[in-house]
Image (cartoon, rainbow, N blue to C red):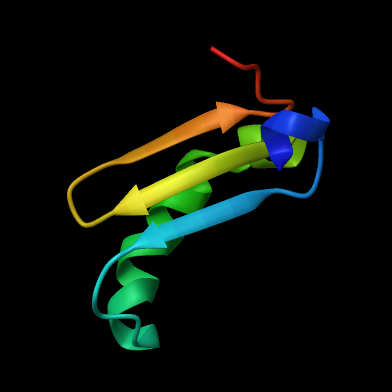
Length: 63
């Protein structure tokens, strides 16, 4: 939907993990959110899993 509408907001954080308990997610997400803070303020899609993270600024362009 973000790409189709060329939306610039809201931010989206997608977490790909089996264990969604707060005590597991917090140590994973907090450093990543801090690392990408400026991009999230600008509007972004953030995808996180246990091994990596990536961010794309909004609006998303079709490739």
